[in-house]
Length: 368
Image (cartoon, rainbow, N blue to C red; front, side):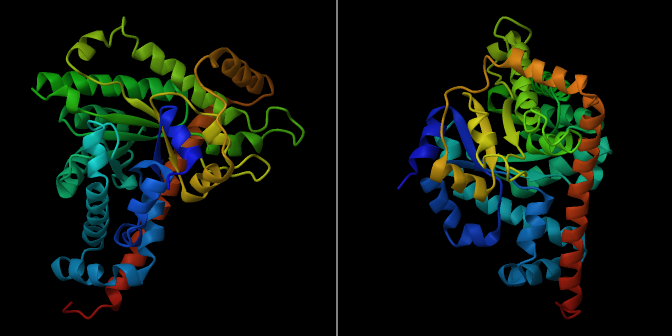
């Protein structure tokens, strides 16, 4: 039976994507069952998710041996295991992809985070990953770093769908939107059908509150308000960029689609806040909210909708960020720090994943 709270969220125009994936989740049938129960229409992954999944050696034991038999290089083994999981998840979500004309039914796979500052290598791996998964509903995740922006343009220009990750500010999102539009221009010039190109821009929410709250007094009324205000201002940028009467009109006439905003890092970190804060507070039509299972289950149990909580909030959101600046919070420094930390966390998780798989490879017989 479909949960009423999540069905209502979906009806409000928010696509619910699960921020989790494992081979057990796919093969047990749980992913498909949760799609029905919880209105899940997409899946996102990241290095930390794969690190957690592959730590379960029993689930991956036979696949690990098969991958090692072809190539004992740890990077190649990890690539084989992760792309196989994403491919299988794409197949589970294929019916949603078809039913929504490619808008949903998506599974995201991230380029090696160690490439975050290397444009050409990011492009090369994005192309390789898309080819390895070989499913139309895969999205390749590329970070919104300085080196990532031209990679986004080039990969979109080749007709590959992209999930842009690690966005922490409205200004950064504006740069991402420009990179996407430039990519659409390249794709159109290369003869691609731009109506088939999709992209999402993943704006991280809870990490901003965690960092800023640590810099505020315990009794400050501004605690827990930065994440929502900052994310809502990205909607203001979205409306500027994709104004039907603006610069997007020519691309739109060719069938191009706006790059949807995706709310990421939506699991609440501070137990003092409602555990559905970043769901109820970011409801607006045409967006995605990617949620870990605990947050999905919390919203299923007691989540509430309060109408559109994003559009029409720009003035109040600007006031919140201005108030934070008045308190001495250097938001630009915070955004830069969070991007740096985000890359570092993904690199750490990726290296942990490599270490786990390397240890498992070392345990196998030399002829395996």
